[in-house]
Structures are given as structure tokens and as C-alpha cells.
Image (tube, rainbow, N blue to C red; front, top):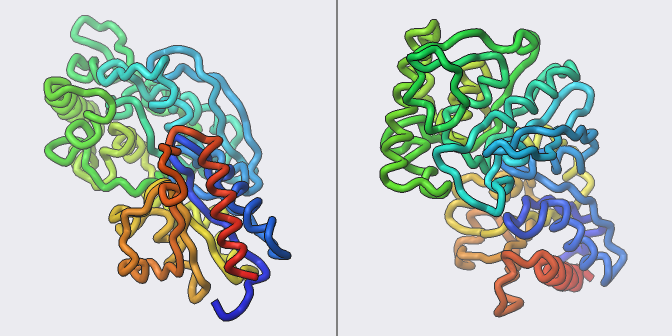
Length: 375
């Protein structure tokens, strides 16, 4: 670089399974600031997946804690973010894979009810809008659990109430009730970059079910259950259910995306929406270098994940990426206008992906290397 940047914007996503976005930003900043008089602006980011609440809180939103039933019913401590106008509620910290007791996967029995209860909690704060951050779910229940929390009842052929989970989708005979009335005055926004429909070859069970522990038999049962769910809703006054099930993004978070659409939510790009929500464009204006990153820089990154959105919106500023690993050859850095890529895997032979302490130490080393290149 010809000029020495005086201010660096550090705007990473999380390193999944290792460090939050805030922890990544803190470590990189500590390294950069250790070698010279460079000011670091920290902007931990999220793309609508897990970490969305933390990113909002880091940017100035207030955190509100609440207890919810986790994906398999055990009590879990969750949180939402609220700035007086917009609330951010996420699937990951209410019914996500990380909340499963002892990590035991429950592809048929996990529920999205905790997410619905967090939405109810947010509604009590009277927000103008709720951002529904979908990602990291443990369930494939089509949002049945979420809808139960919001006022729906699902009955079997004997008239018994059904818990909202994937196992019970095919048992639904009757749908009663309507959503919580507070939804009428609140804008719902689904922030997600998943484009899968609810059912079928590219649907939630087939594509994401195996990651949640679903066997081939489970995938088939869940897909049939979701199709039945859509059919029952269609005959219960939700005539648009079949069309919404085909909508790109209906399959996000095990079908919670479908339930959100059913409630009238609009869907936006998670990466770009959170860049707007966290005021990225204004923050970048006072910076001469942008450092972004995520756990893995690869083909999926180029396809539109958060670092690509950051790069696209950084203008002519130099951009450096940090990552746990980089599978992107140097000759392709220009596709994201990257002037450098620093990967933890190039600094150690150990697996840092499950070692937060090692990851942070290596990011501080990377920060020092970045800083030394600026002075």
C-alpha cells in the first residue's frame, strides 16, 4: 500500500464454533494497535444467522435476556436485541443446534417453539419491526413450534393438542386460532440468504436435515410431514400456503422461514440488511482500510456471504480478509477486491476451529502482521 491508513475498520463475521464476531474484531484490533499509532474502529457483523443478536448489541442495541424452552424442551437462557425501534430475534440462541443437551441431535423432536416465545417477548416491547434472524436451527418443524407459541393450536384426529416438532407434522388434523394480535402492528423482516424451498429435492429436510442428524428415513418422513402441514394449512384458511412453501427461503431454519412468510414477513438479504442495520456505510467513510473475514473464505464466500458484501460496499478502500482457513487461490482474490488474505491455518498445524484461545492468539499475530504492513 502506498499510503499508511490511519483508521482501520474491522468488520468480520464470527468464526463459527470458535469465536464470536466481537471476539474476532477484538483480537485483530489488539494485534494491529500493538505495532503503531493506528486507530481501529470495530464493527462485529452478522448475516442473519447465529450471532445476529450479539452483533446488534455490539453496535449499540440493548440486550434483553429471557428464558425459553430450548429445542428439546429444556429451559434455555436466550436474548434479543432492541434499540427502541427494531428488535432482533434469532433462531440460534432460542432453538439452535448449540442448545441441544450434550450436543445430542434430535431431528424429529426438536422444536422452534423457543423462537416463537422470543418473538412474543419482543412484541411486548412494542417495536416498529422485528428482524427474524434465521440460521443454526436444530429443528425441521416448518415453524410449527413457533406458530404454537404465537397462538395457533394443532390437533390430531382425536382432538389432542400436538407439540410443535417434526415428528408431529404428519399427525395434524385441525388448525385452530390465529397469530398473536400484536403482529398486526409490527413489521416482520426475515433476514436470511438461504434460498431453498420448504419441501422437495432442494427443500429443508433434504438439504439441511442430515446436518441435524436426520437419516434418509427421517428426511423422507420430514418431507412428507411438511407437505401435509402445508396442505392442512391450505384447507384451514391459509390459501397462500402452497405458494409460500415454494418461495425461495421458505426452507430456511428447518422451515421457520415458511412460517414467517405465512405471518406476512418480508424477506431480505441477511448480509446486506445487517450491514444497513449496523450502519456500515457511515462507519466505512471515516476509515482508509477495511478488515473483514469469517471462518472459511471459499467459493461460498464469493457467492454472496457477508465478507463479499462488505467488500462490495467498501468502494475503493483496500480490503483484507482474515479467516480460519482460506480455500480461495490468490488469483481469485481480485473477485472480492482483496489485497490480502490471512488464515489461521497458515500460522499453525493445530486445529484452531474448536480452540477459542488459540484462534484469538493467532488473530492477534495476524493483526500484528497487518499492522506491520501499514507502518
